[in-house]
Length: 253
Image (cartoon, rainbow, N blue to C red; front, side, top):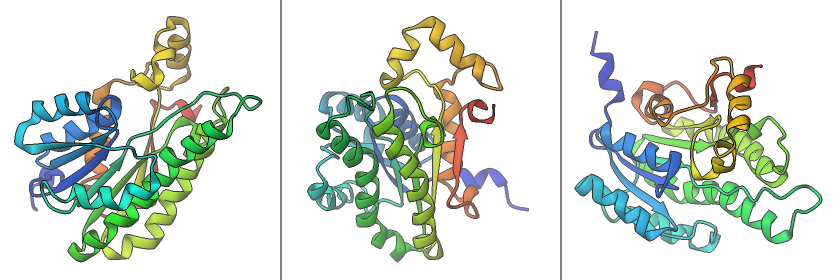
């Protein structure tokens, strides 16, 4: 029997991670580098992205880009192939939560939510798939959410897009898995990131969320590492079209 640990080795693989300037996206990007991959990180914030790339040296490259501009996504796909070759892995961690209530949702807030959270993952992946098909191997990892299945106050636009991510993941799997490309999603619970700063700045609210989980605590950055590596490696070769909730059992209760 071969060493099963070898299935998690990403040496020789190239990954593209959106939202790599901070939070779970940046931690996912660093996790893939630690497993042997070369990673292109994409985000709008040039300084933070550059600082991350500097930490990882020759194994990382940052590209500052507005993922909300759908017309530029094909050009972005071409740009991501320049540093290390065409990506084998794409992780869609970039996202926005406008936190507008249903009565206050604006057309602008609705449109940017759909553009960044739902349209960008599809059209950027569509542009990357031909190279994955040519290799007969690819990994697509979308970021879902607790709001993929739960309704939260002030989350109608965000929740609609994250529910869409669940179906997008299944549809990607149906379309491309026969070509050796798996498509899965991670649904993080409450992790301490910029996106959830309002939650963790309120100790009582953070404690209530922790109590809602089966495990009894909120997430730490280390909790995302194993799921990301599993779904981006050979270890998950027979797993596709799934949403893995990394939430301490929040959605199980």
